[in-house]
Amino acid sequence: MRASRFFISTLKEAPSDAEIVSHQLMMRAGMIKRLGSGIYTYMPTGLRVIRKVEAIIREEMNKSGALELLMPVVQPAELWQETGRWDKMGPELMRVKDRHGREFAIQPTSEEVVTDVVRGEIKSYRQLPLNFYHIQTKFRDERRPRFGLMRGREFTMKDAYSFDRDVEGMQKSYQVMFDAYVRIFNRFGLKFRAVAADNGAIGGTGSHEFHVIASTGEDALVYCPNSDYAANMEAAEAMAIGERGAATQDMKKVPTPGKTKCESVVELLGLPLSQSVKTIALTVEKEVDGKVTKQYFMLLLRGDHELNEVKVGKVEGLSNHRFSTEAEIQEVYGTVPGYLGPVAPKQPVTIVADRTAANMADFVCGANEADFHLTGVNWGRDLPEPIVADLRNVVEGDASPDGQGVLAIERGIEVGHVFQLGTAYSKAMNATFLDENGKPAPLQMGCYGIGVTRILGAAIEQNFDDKGIVWPDALAPFQLVLCPMGMDRSEMVKEQVEKLYAELLAAGIDVIVDDRGLRPGAMFADWELIGVPHRVVIGERGLKEGNLEYQGRRESEATAVPVADLAGFIK
Ligand code: ATP
Ligand code: MG
Ligand code: MG
Ligand code: MG
Image 1: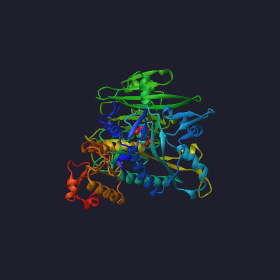
Image 2: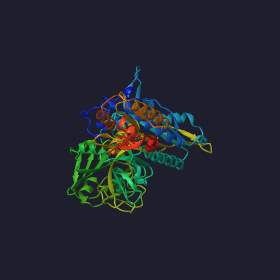
Image 3: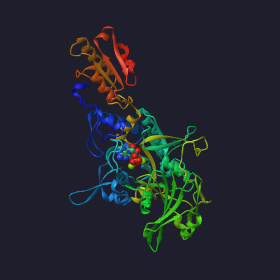
Image 4: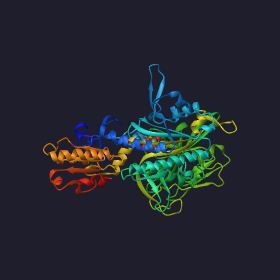
């Protein structure tokens, strides 16, 4: 590429709405252009990085045996109604109507469509396992789109979906994807960590998130430096609550866009949700005379652990109660077969449930994270002993659940997520196959996402300095820039630049020549901002001694390199 024919548009200042480094630098480097809230045009420089991310993902997905297809962005509402997500997903799901008044979703993800494809195509266990993936535009009407590509509304995701005949097969497919993700993130050249997520409480195998490590990350990651234990904060706390998960077999994270169960309970109780209050909410759904009523149980632990209260609120009738002793709780709560024990500072909370009571099952539990609650938190039922739950915050220095040391906490950016879905979608959509005995059985599914465009933001949050972006080689829009000094004046420079350019291209290096005729300072500033990892300056003085000047993006000084050695020097 020649810079004179490329589009380079850099800025000295970032726009004021760019709050974090990656957003500021991407705007300044001219990689993206804002069209609306959470909606961006990917400019040529930015798109080159996106294409590199996609190419690596594609190669590794193909290598793992997954098959690429491409599913529509606009998807009929009927499919989303089949799984119930049309109603469940709330305002994050973007809905549109066509000219006939028919409703459609703009896909935030594609479980429904891929399950529909497969139920029409798969007849027999002989066609399994199968893994379909695509790299496609997504739309999520995020409550707070921000940080540029990090939390956009329109963004690109790689999403894959595996189909297997049994749980064992699904777990195998999951492991294949997990391994592919490790290869992908290694190839990106980023520091990352895979952590147990969601149903991590059932042993940490049901779901994992992949996080790029960055101090500016939105998520707290909990890990043990002496072992493999690693979980996101939510899973780490769920593990603490569920005493390593014996009780939480069916726990599922359910999007509750705009609100958490906790928030709504807190609002019902007329209390402000404050950062310093740790909340655990439980909901029991009871069917009485064919009518489902919900009862919320709410536990508040103040940040300083001095004041602890248990609050119970009912949705119906909006009656609230405030308790501070176990006796008080039982007085009001006696009709419900279970109770929350008193909460003492930094002490375990005992949740005792009557195991014979059917309505103790399927709690809905929300930690105070926006947009999600957990369902299927089954404390009590089918358990040999009452569950002792420790509701402390998980903090640095706590004992690791695996007993291998103490916990450390670092921050990360969620860039990938793998999930064992089981039969939730296949049952809802009647996606079955015939097993060896000719009997129909529901497909066992897994789903696997990577936030393609978010990778750009995450990579920059991890790799930048005061001059700009520092791309890892694999993601850089250009690997190397040739900067000629006085190309228009010196035949010697011109000749050498053309020769080098041809050689580097032939060696498979993604090179750009800056033939714009800028002054060296301006030229260097552009490439440092854009983050090209290797720079070679070609000047007459050096050439007379047979040398070029090489400088790596992280280096503070240039090194003289004999012309003939350059290709070897870069590789
Ligand atoms: P988050 O917790 O950040 O909202 P998520 O858990 O809702 O993400 P998933 O449904 O797991 O996201 O989607 C898979 C991947 O898609 C995520 O790991 C993330 O990398 C990416 N992603 C999700 N939402 C966005 C967004 N609004 N903008 C850019 N990338 C996103
Ligand atoms: Mg989300
Ligand atoms: Mg998430
Ligand atoms: Mg996720």
